[in-house]
Image 1 (cartoon, one colour):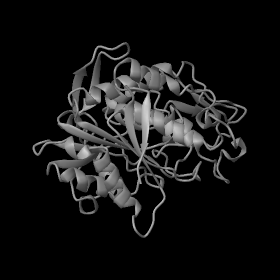
Image 2 (tube, helix red, strand yellow; image 1 turned 90 degrees about the horizontal axis):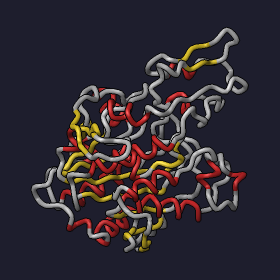
Image 3 (cartoon, helix red, strand yellow; image 1 turned 60 degrees about the vertical axis):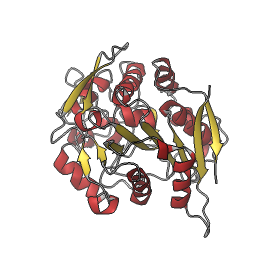
Length: 369
């Protein structure tokens, strides 16, 4: 049976603005029937790094939060600390970054809680006994919530090819130790022909495993590398490509299994939104935002994280490519994600998520006005 994915486009009018359309989407998806008055509901978001401007704007998050609060007063907005070096690597800096980007108690109407604690050690081991992960390290506040709203910004990603609901669940709900497990198979290397020796990757490496050789080319000590992928993100010359010593398959499969662990104690109590707006080539963890790849498409809602990601890819591939984006020379292609990062098979995470019972790739798209 096909999973239902509800969709509203980004067209608005004086009679109905986009926030009102979002409220309609919430009701049509029957999300108002999901939670009980005593549920502790985690609203999982990503508020972006400082300098990033492509994350989902606060008014959309607030609109969803206000709808959720009609079911239960015990609602909080949350995210976890990062593995990489940035402005969100501990709860103090993380909350400051959230506030810098507009996410506060005052703007959202609910508290902000860093789900894995001050330094990423507030963890609960969740036993799932899957192919790659036997016990997942899930952030405590997410585990102890009884319901969850997963709000994801669909965009490109340097490690997965795309970021959506599954990645937001799997990577986003893992503690720092869990994120290390997920990244442990990634061992990037430097292309010396593209490296300009500017040391940007060295300054951003959280474990200081990158150095300059005598020829002023960067070198990664893979015995010390934790696979966070930060060097891939920050190199402006693309000198550290997605061409790892190991396949990206373990990363994608582990992330799908972590996503399963994150929702394993919340049967029937998780809802998903994917925002196909301001779709950029790189994720919101970057401290910059490039031009959007396509015009804004719309907002999707579903109770199935696999179906909503599959539907997002379908709509993204149907949309025209924006001029002045990094993909403007790829007009007319059927698979934009493959063109964006040809070395990554992004379908692995979708296939594995379906195989382990997280959801279905078969969807019914229901458009509402």
